[in-house]
Amino acid sequence: MKYAPPIGQEAQGEEAHYVDGNPELGILGSPVPAAAIEQGQRELLHVIKQAGLTPDEATLTQLYEAILKIIGVQVPVASKTETGLVQIGDGLNITPEGLLSVLVATSKQNGIMRPDGTTCTVENGVLKVLQQSNDYMEAWRKSWIGVPRYWRSTELPDNHCWANGDLIYFNDWPELKEIYEAGGFEGMLMGWDADVETQKANLGKWRPNAAIPTGLYTPALSGQFFRNWAPGADTTAGAWLADTGRNATGVVGALDSNILPSGVFFTDGRGLTAVSSGDRSIVKMDLSKQWKGHVGTEFSPEHIWQPAILYLGRAAQV
Image 1 (cartoon, rainbow, N blue to C red):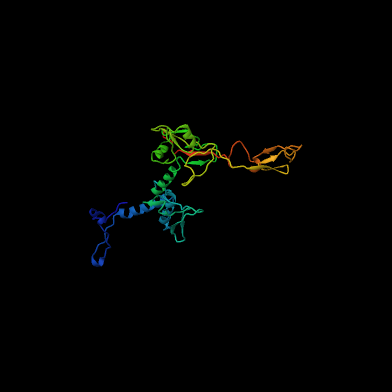
Image 2: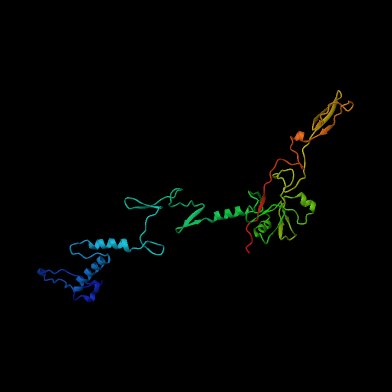
């Protein structure tokens, strides 16, 4: 609707004002054009009709009713690209006074969280994980490259290999090369040209495959017993030692023509007299008598067979 100024003041447009007439003072009232009366009525009628109401001269609240109805029907639901009505969700609350408040998030309730400033922060309303946390996790991941560890399955996980002496190529595992070139295997490397005897004596060490290596042979830990190494140990880290067994003793003696064995020696049970008697006994040896029956084909402590694997880092992008 356009403003309709008093008759004779059209040139002033919206700057023209209506004044009341006062005959006693000789002041004429502003002449009112028809548009000033008609336009306002038609604007109000249009709002009432758009709300689906029928104009009624006896009802003076139709404009208000029409506005409420139009807001409830024609205003869209708010989205990221369009403003509109919003329905309060689980993370917000409205008090009886109409105050909108944000709930604090808990394990049982959606809501807002407060960044601790250590692991995450907010910049211009955007939640960000601090880089120091990412750096820490990345350093922790890389610290596992080349570290032997026990595994829960006989199936290899991704980016791992068995600790069985296989050759691992740097082209396939660039992060392994990165650790090697940075001195990460210091003290656990044998020479690339180590002879067979040296290799056998250092089964727990890595070995480059050439003077200018393209890869590393992994430690050959399969079938080996582990003893933890620390500074001050009796041998070097990664060294291999031959089988040893604990001592087993026994005595064979004679007293009053009787054979008296002890320890790992015993008689065959046919008699206890010496060979000069008619009933001879044979002295035998059995280590299981001292080792409580736990004998086998090799010397070994009690043990289990647990898969050992090595993390190689991220594979090369092909």
